[in-house]
Amino acid sequence: MDEIVHSLDLRGVACPMNFVKTKLFLDKLPAEARVDVLLDAGEPVDSVTQSLQAEGHHIERTVAEPGGHYRISVRKG
Image 1: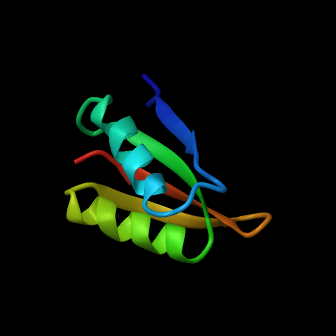
Image 2: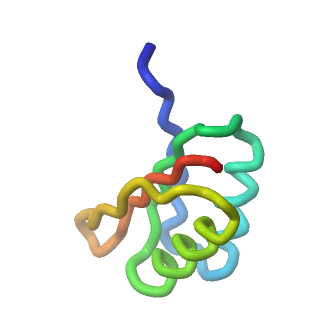
């Protein structure tokens, strides 16, 4: 069975709301679920990544996207 990958587009959402929205989204999912989060470059991708890791989630990869955005793949801890 293929894994369901959830998506969350937070381009244009300022810190710390992008982390809050990601956390609330993850709270609704079962353990080990994966979410691809689209974020603006710079502070958003750095702070959300660090905050999610501090919460016990695993960042599987960070990929630069066209247009100066980043897609982070998060595995719920």
